Each structure stands twice: as structure tokens, then as C-alpha cells.
Image 1 (cartoon, helix red, strand yellow):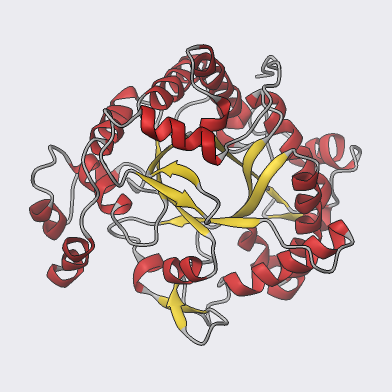
Image 2 (cartoon, rainbow, N blue to C red):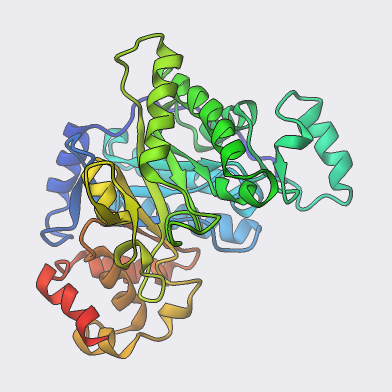
Length: 385
């Protein structure tokens, strides 16, 4: 699929735009549905739309565009996608839905768009000859070398990440992406080791800082599968303070200003009733005299946390652990209970619900209409479990 390029819309999420949006959605959302993004006074919804699921077909494109449009009209202002989702088709579907929502009166400054890069985007599906594809589309284009490739699918070079920013901007039809995340960089650790990975990330962060200065992205971050959930001594563990240190040095190098501050503002990790390590595992030495869970560390270090895998690939849409089923019995199904569990977690800013079926959006919008659990009630779930 080669999507039509949309005319780029200017602007980005702002404090005034998101606050006006939250106020306009007061009749559709409960108190506590919006939270502040890294002390910048931007308000983000506790539930976001994820766009990973679904076949690479025009029918699913149409459904995702409709979901994005309706979500933005219903009190969800965080939309998460990636350059490789559904072979690049999700970007264009999100762009179509966004542009329709803007035409209906939603302000661009009310919307927080997240895209990601790192995995190869095979627009026409997996190539018959991956080596030839890489040579023609990556190496000859100056986007990376084979030593930048892990597992044949993940490319970590400043040139490729920059290319995926541009690819995302064009297909979303925006001048600025609010946040761009490096997706699962830890897949390189078994291939090249953590020290070499961090050297690569340092170079990528310089490129991302320059993209911020150019207004192409608002901030950046890291999306992981294992890196923030495993024990400290696990080979795949990634230290948030160490990443922030890399970002601080990158900001100085990109700007030439020794006092420059970095723009690494988001981490994304799987979190749900079964994969709760981000809240329960104390694996992060914060550099502030304590060891904390990922969510606690991010709160202390002014980093916003987004959760992926809210429904654990659909499993938690079909059943809930007993403690959650009892405590959230007022919600009519397991999907709503899973969303409510996540969005009530202290320190978790936005829980992303991957959806290509409008029924999933119905559940997300229904949960947005009820307040998150009080902290004491949420913590009691762990006691019961």
C-alpha cells in the first residue's frame, strides 16, 4: 500500500488546547480522566487509542480511521501508532481519522499524537528476498548498514530513525508529531551488547533532539517490551536514569549549549493485570537515593508513562482475575475491567488500548465516563490477589 500524502496540518498539543478540550468533554468523561503530561500543563486522557491490531486491508483502514475520529470526539485525545504498524497502513488510517476530526471542529492543539520507529516498514508485506530489499531500500538510501540491523527486522541508526519521523509526519498529515518513541531498542542487546546499544542510542538521541529543535517532533522517548519490566541484573534491563543521562548529553551536543535540557519525556511498557512488573518490581535505582518501580521512578524523574498491552492481545478482554472481577463487578465486561485497572494505577499516565474493532472503542469510552479507582481501593486489589 502506498498511501496518499495528506496536506500537513500545523500545530501540536498545547496546555491551552488540551485544557479547553478536557473542559469541552466534561459531560462525556469523569473527573480524573485527564492527567498532566510531565509538569508541562498539557492534559492527556487516561485512555489512548492504539493502532497495532488488524489485518493490512482497506476495510481495517476504514475502521481505524472511524475509531480515531470518534475517539477524539468522545474524550480520548491520545493516539498511538508506529511507522511499521500494519505495514505502514496504520499511519495513513490515523491521518485520515485525524483530518476528519479536525474538519468537525477538534483543535489540533487538543490532540497528542505518538509514533514510533526502529522496526523495518515493509509497505508491500514481507519481502521475498530480505537481503535484496535491505540493499535497495536501506543501504543504497544511506539509512543504515547491516551492522545496525538486529534479527533482520530492527534498524537502529540516526538516519533511519530520522527517516521514520518523516515517514510518520507525511502519512499522518501533520507538521509536528507530539512524541516519537524508539521502539524496543533492547532487541539489539543479544546481538551487540548493552554498552554498544547505548552508544547507538546516544547517536539516535542527538538526531531526536535536533528533530525537536526543528519542530518536527515535540519530544521523544523509549517504548520497550522487556527493558523496564525485568530484574536489574537481567541482560535486557534498561536503566531509566542512564537513558536520561544519554539524553542530557545528546541535548548539549545537538544544541551546542552546555546548559541544554533534554526532551526524553515518555516511556512506554506493557502493563496489565498479569504483566504488572512496572508497578510491583522495584528494579530502578533512581539516582535520588532510593530504588523504585518503573512507575515510581518515572514519577520522580518527570517522565510520563504509557502502558501498552492493556488487554494482553485480547486475553484480558475475555476474562478477569478473580480479585479484579469482584472489585470491578459494576463494569459489564472483562475488557472494561482491564482498562479501568490500568488507568487507576498510580503513576501510569495513559493506558493504550489497541483496537481495530469499533466495539473496543465503545468499551474505552464507557470507562472514560467513570472515575478511576481511588488509590486505597486499587492497592487493595494486590492485597486480595
